[in-house]
View (cartoon, helix red, strand yellow):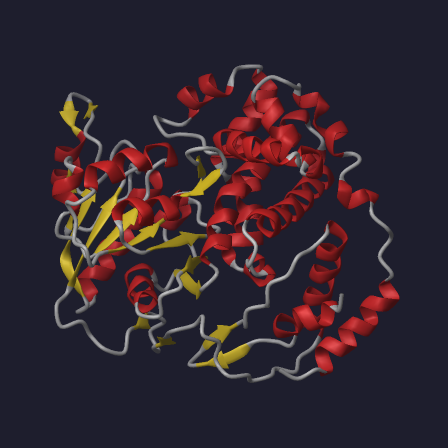
Length: 448
């Protein structure tokens, strides 16, 4: 296998246009763990060792220009402003509502009024929707940060979504089927969806279902995805970060980017939808492993090893179960960046550390620590384990398998490192780095 041929689009540099750096997509392929290691090494070394930038034709995955203010713009304004509905109002949903509401006020392409479906509950003796609409603050899930006044909390999901042209889904993945069943036939047939939901669902008859696929199948509308290194509180505090939108539709892509991007929340759009979504789900499993490491007091070297092995299993999982994915996608915010952030700062890491230190169950800690929100990692690990068991592939994914067994009490946290000590990544043949030098040279000198 010629790895230079596989990775040359990524390795040969960045395409620059209109102040936007564009990384061409890599072709698809089938990989072993040793293949993956070689590919990553070649691509990273070539990308950062060479200052020469090539200028290929703009790839089909990029649809936009950036204006001088740093905000993306669609070339043609919509004749009828698009209405946006955010389905979900937790920590992440409220953080996104701040962005969407502000962008809707500025853009001629969107109606100023943004509806936000809020599951009705009482907070300090008052309905949460009433509090949000009166104070413009989600005092339960995003306290201390104001929502734009044009974001309107609605307790009925059908009422919130019925007139929307863009539906942004940001609820725990366990509730998506029920919501879709409620919305079926009651939304615009021309609507498009964007899923921010990180997780899988178990498919009927076995296997894994991607959330975007469920939305598309049930509601008969196209669904793109947004995933990235985006801790909700930091986004709400307007700290600079990046995100990735996976969107195959060259018409929908610019619209989604315009309603999401700000000068502190930077968006890259790629057409590798499934890989973007799978990254967003699998990184939560790895974050549980990082939390176990912290709880055991094993240090940063061990955590780095867990993160790297987790990344390799993520890549392998996509290769096995979602063939056609692109390795280059793992270098976007949805991939390695989101993985690192979640393994150091996310709720899955935090609760998993407490799981080791306190001896309490995951459910107890979820109730105590998450203020009514759901932990995604253990549930996703269960769904992945189910799929691996059906395929007889648990031994090929020892990190994912061990994390699931620890979360369900089949193993103790102290067993974790022993489970990954003989990882397939460690048992392959030694990489010949002299070949990598040759691949480096070929990557840098080859032409598109």
